[in-house]
Length: 395
Figure 1 (cartoon, rainbow, N blue to C red):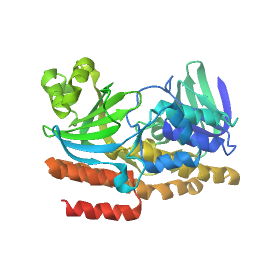
Figure 2 (tube, helix red, strand yellow):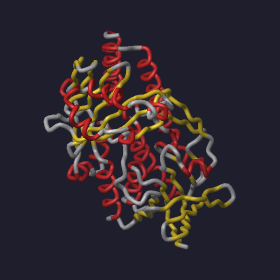
Figure 3 (cartoon, rainbow, N blue to C red):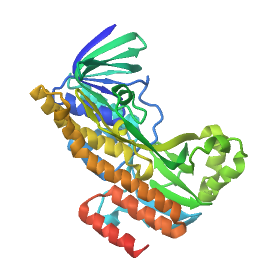
Figure 4 (cartoon, rainbow, N blue to C red):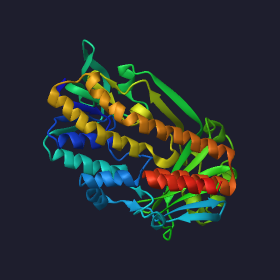
């Protein structure tokens, strides 16, 4: 059995867990990051950074390192009704640098892990699955896991669950969780983009459904297609051609690329859409964060951005706890107190957005989508008021 003795053990090497690991290691906190997958280059879906998180990466001199590996700032957000463009939004209209940045998670994770390793206070265990939390009285003091090489035992002052919507840490800690369904799922696919396809995010309403097209680094285009909740198994029993014709109707210029690369239902991945709220994010010696604490729906591309902001808030709280040798819930609860209000408001906003999509159609819906998404992209309070007035004037 392999034994580790660290200050902090983080479970989940996604953007939030890796960012927290970097922030702690740079402060000299001995940190172990555990990831159940064998590779970091697996498929991710939420790969757009908003402006406030890009600023956060610049604050820690990480942005240029990720940029060197490859990012793609968006030039426009476009809204289409069928094949007709209804509006096109550029960052210059709002005095911002971009309307989102596509970044492959592998690029971000590689930069974070490389920088963390240089501190000498960081270690990463891949292909390792958590099996049990270790307890002393009512405090979490570590965990037991299984790797490809055998059993692993980790003693730590604090365990952090950053292991996503199906968090093992959350389940093992027995934290009560309320799962909310949103009435729709999303089909994802990725195809090569036409050579002249500019870096844009395109939202299309066609045949009473919403399709979103995201330009990606490397010359690819990501497709997000809303379908009714739980409908994919029945869809797969139907003829594939009429379904794919809807996508071609949404973007006729993609026809040769779609026909070459989306040949049957297996070329889509279905994401069941859900959000969650937890009774608490903190126990003695334990914290959950990101999707483990507050799973977000895909609306607005909020999830990864909220999770990384969690890490920025949590790192100094953990630092203080280690300095004071106080790992109690009373000490760690500051994280939840500082973040829960914003998360609640974001989740409430997602629900309002989705309900409006069910009520509206055509250009009115596109205008609603625009104002809501711009408020997500740039959340400065005074701009928020302007967006609200603009929305009210165009309802």
